[in-house]
Image (tube, rainbow, N blue to C red; front, side, top):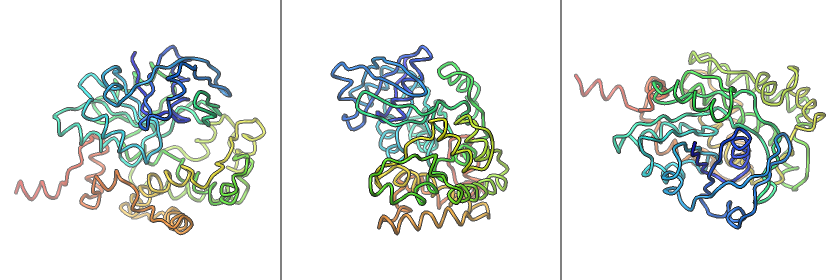
Length: 368
């Protein structure tokens, strides 16, 4: 199949490598144009670590080229880049396309579905609760893959395309997908924001100093306890919404292949096995600049709407805003464009299945 990947960072490179190992070729598009410069010069892409491969992905010069030459489009870049990329791709998406968002952030699938609806177009948009792999881009032609996940939560909007989209994901990446009931379940299945919040809060000075540090080793008992408490807030919201999501313990077990124990103990085991990862060496890290506005914020909003306020998540947003001297609550361009304040929780629940965000109260009033 022809597969286009929007992105040229760690996850985009890693995703291309997993596809290659499964017998598929990918085309990479760097929205800035910088991420694929070395690949355009003819150098191969090398993956090392949990997955090893040397291959030569093709590159696209524009969103239009990526869409025209590929039937499957995968969005694989930080959440703060999603709106720009979705805006660029939307005019070129046709009825033949399927879209995968890896990983899904802040109802981006609904945002894209709204853009396409204006053109009278509906296509399968699949949201993953996390990425196919974890890793770190080493250079313009090398990525170190820490782990390839054995289980990924997903859903598709509109929901009638779910079986077709699941079959596609299995064909491309293998039998590793767990269907979930709508985008709210996928939102609450993405543990990266809460985990990265605890890790960054506990290690912010290491990040600021540019140190090289083991992430798994530094999920100490106190940091691990914070991660567990954050998870309890997320699970309470999911339960209130009638949604089934995995626990943080299942997440680390399935993603990093370690026995279930306390979160600190599981991370120490990851470190001992050599797949605990290296923590961010800069405060300008997606652990904060992506995960606070595009992860924590939506969880906090769902907590308020469901009657189960996520007080630790809310505190994290405020603490990071103070640390960084910026208001992260105002930085989510997707939620701003969707104008969530106009809609009820029931509106969101419906949109999470259909992809269509409509104000049911206004529709009812108009009908009457």
